[in-house]
Length: 80
Image (cartoon, rainbow, N blue to C red; front, side, top):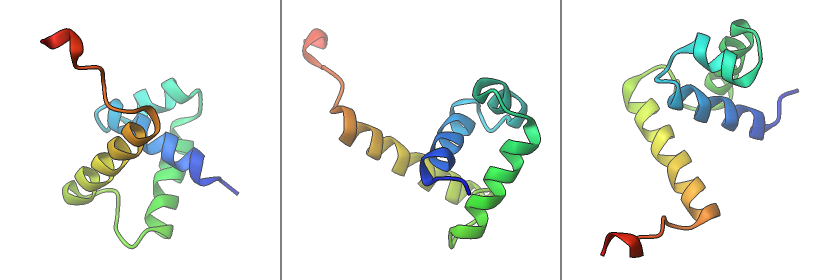
């Protein structure tokens, strides 16, 4: 069974690769069908499909917020 971390990493990488499943697979070191299977798994366990623009946008925003909470905001002092 896939962990939520694997699904989260797959989604994040998929977004970073501009929704290109082939590039996502190469970056993750998996077969493209594995990416498809993981995205389908997200669709199964989520009330919303990760294949619509609105949900892709919402998921991407949620992953960004999660990453910022974990790492903190970028240092803005060099921009002053």
